[in-house]
Length: 478
Image (tube, rainbow, N blue to C red; front, top):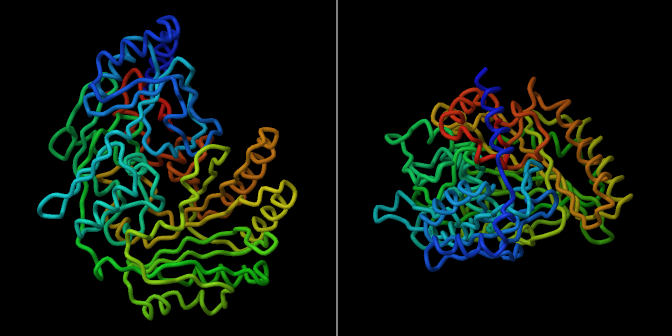
């Protein structure tokens, strides 16, 4: 019953909102800047905080560029006083179809809070709420430690971590969310709290997987670990161009037969490559030590399929994301659709290959890709969800498709393509209840698919910590 009462309270809160244009456009800028630190600013230049994808992106009219943690609390209080919705962003990669903002609302740009500090003992790192993964990795590498970074340098650390996070180091240390020790967090009423195992531990559990529903993290302390093999890794891409469709069954079998150790990660999928935009199977393989022989032996089942190209090499680990620079190009329509899988079914993947190639041939959207991220989940499952709200530790394969297009007339065509791909995945996912990792999901999934068995407790905590649903933009739980 309380869930429905809370939903009604949230709806009443929305009805109570009035347009900030009643204040006058310049008045919001002037009034809010007067309350912020001298280095902070407010602007109507929306392009000053660009997003990865413009498709269904939040349509706010103001950007607050914060410079201090207290600026976030001040902004939240001001928005509450004036009936203005708000949303925090750092990297701006969240593509969910759940945003509901107008030109009178505010984006809080966290990028000014981008400090990354490693402690003297080199076992903790304090990360600003606006830091991106490139800054996170560079600071760690310079201090001789490894951290649980994501696979793209321009994605925000906090945004990805608070959704659970995935990382090539999670094979060894658990999810990024599992490694959050404490956080400074601004609540829906503008309080700046410290959240930890001894201070509001229920809130710590909630933000480790559903953070966007409970507050804005202005900084967090996370675990840092000693480097392995002097920070060297062996990684690169294998491309199977020749007869790729005919090799698909053998490739699926090879992936299913891989025993992923704590050193092994594979991201594989379908892309179009030169010459002539040929459809191909790609496999990005990562061995988290710089041992070439051991790495090739670990991925021997893939090498037995005789890839047409092999770009593997020994790298310093801070260069692992060099090949994802294109994911930092902002603008255009680039949402993702995702389903979590427990198994790989060949017939399903053959149907997806045929549907994908037909879609690209019909639309000319050659940059449309299919990607599957595969990790060793033994440590993640051993840790469990007792200390974190992220529920989907049984996912073995994080499957997603990202089309890229500019022409709005293609919106419905793209949506039909992606919906069919997801339906095919769900049909043979291996789960009775479909599961989706929040940071990869599209936004039309049932909440049970996103939050799993954590949803009832999350709703109870939402009623306690955010009864007026101020945090209601990114996969809101009510």
